[in-house]
Amino acid sequence: MNLSGLKTLFLKEVRRFLRVPGQTVLSPLISTTLYFVVFGVSLGGRMEEVTGQPYLPFIVPGLIFLGLANNAFLNTSSSLFIMKIQGTIVDIQVAPLGPWEVLLGFVGGGMVRGLAVGLLTWAVALLFAPLQLAHPAVTLLFLLGTAYVFSVLGLIAAVWAEKFEQINFFPTFVMLPLTFLGGVFYSIARLPDPWRTISHFNPMVYMVEGLRYGMLGSSAFPPLLGGAILLALAVASTAITYGLLASGYKLKQ
Amino acid sequence: MSNAPVLEVEQLVKRYRTVTALDGVSLSIGAGEIFALLGPNGAGKTTLIGAVCGLVKKTSGRMRLFGTDLAIDPIGPRYQVGLVPQEVNFDPFFTVSESLRIQLGYYGRPPDEARIREVLEALSLEGKADAQTRALSGGMRRRLLIAKALVHRPRLVFLDEPTAGVDVELRRELWDYVRKLRSEGTTVILTTHYLEEAEVLADRVGIINEGRLLLVEDKRQLMRRMGEKRLHIRFEVPVEALPLELAGAQLADDRRSLVITERNGHAPTGAVLAALYRAGIPVQDVETRASRLEDVLIEVLRGRGGGA
Image 1 (cartoon, rainbow over the protein chains, first blue to last red):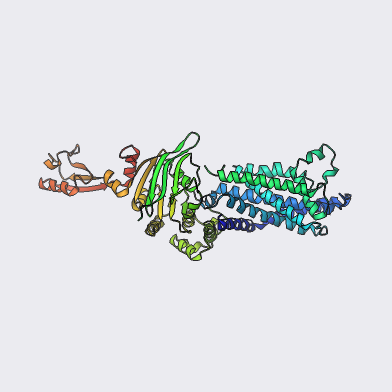
Image 2 (cartoon, each protein chain N blue to C red):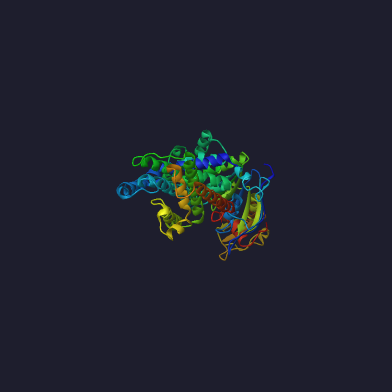
């Protein structure tokens, strides 16, 4: 394995988003803070407790998930897609970088951005709700796992997309609805059927609930189930991405 | 110059849906040579380079780089390869020297500021080391591409139209640098639309058209074989008859001029003029024009003198 190449690509990806912090870190942070203000402070006062938690602390894990997942995805998808459009992808295609180096280099960069936004969101949340960290190891696992899975998904979207419209397809038409219907702002247990049953097919639910278990100590599903789903998604998305990169699908003529 | 092949291509085929871009190309490039791959637009030059560099998926055929079959190990040989792509590209997030440091890292090399300075100086970019790549002019961006292709000291460099859009003075400096690379043992494969560039630099020439390699030959040998020299002689007065030595030559209709074509050293200029002098025919003006690689290329593309 070309470790120097992998490290270079990873650091380049991190430096790339740090060059435009207003766009890559500050902007999502402001959006998430607005969610706290609108849903937590403004509406939250009128809400009763959710699964034994006041509403504001209840939505903190979900909002961390939202910032983390979106930004991990956006980093890899925008970076590789822009390289395709600008032609700079030639640099990594000609260089002695195999599929693993490319996958891990991009995904590493995406994870750093996702975790940076997620942790900063958590820091902002401390202005509105007390720190809660019931199971640190579980929290860390779900933070890292979510960042990894969404970074890899971003890479798949970038390989597949040929137009700017297509690169926006996944976050707008898949991630946004699944996230908002994934129990970020409410408990799945409170939904009436058939919505509750339908929600069980949304993988985001298990990630949000896993993080909620790690931070708050309780969740609608056992964390092991969330962990297993996260692991399955990680393995499947990695296998797909490796296959795409190794075959040169939509990257090589 | 060693004769061990740096690149061997055997029966390489690349087919797109309806187009055959490479149609059974076979080629062997030795170490330390400058090989010019020439042909019209869409002939298959960039596709061939792309296939070797991992940008294009071949349909069939074999490629070996430094003796390694790329079907078995597509990555290892690439540590020794540099490519200047035809399309200018740049990463707007980084400065010129950062771009070169990134390039070194991709190729497993530690940051080497001395090498970066050396390459930037060779390409007249030393004053732009800290400039953002988006602030560079078109010519500078192309030079940055060349710097990126060379910074890791590759043993084989592909230059796909390296001097397009580069001014004349700098183009000549680049030629000197390419010659320096060859003197250091680097193999250079060049495509260019400036045939003067190929004429000045190349040791061997390959001519490709419609995906088929029509000819591969030593440049000097090719010019001797297919090149010609046209001798245009203008007389002071109309000439009644030419001397016997020039019996096959045809006077112009006004009998005041004569064009003699010299091939492979036949009918040399000196002998023609001596014959006219001996016959007492007064010559007003003599003009000679030697074939250039461009003429040879056109001849080969028209189907004359090919056969790789």
